[in-house]
Image (cartoon, rainbow, N blue to C red; front, top):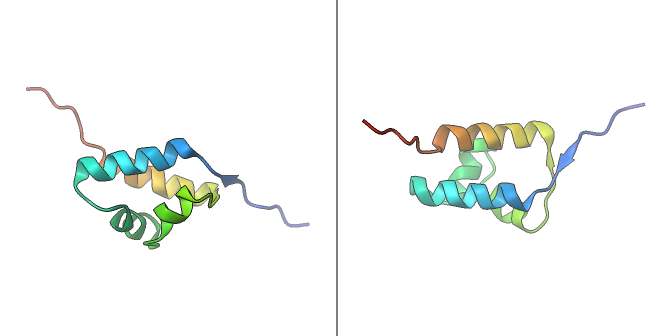
Length: 73
C-alpha cells in the first residue's frame, strides 16, 4: 500500500511569500520559478492548492534565503 504524501495548505505561508517577495522586490511568479520551477505556484496556492511537505520545504527554504536580515552595525 502506498502512503499518500502529506499535503499542506496555509494562508500564512501565502502571506509570507507575498511579504518576502515585496521586500525582495521580486514577483510571486519569480518566487515560484526559483523555489520549485513553477511560476504559477503562488497564484495556485492562494486559490487553495495544497503543497506536499517536500514542496513546502523548498518554498520555505527559498523564503529563508530571500528573507532580509536585520543587521545593525
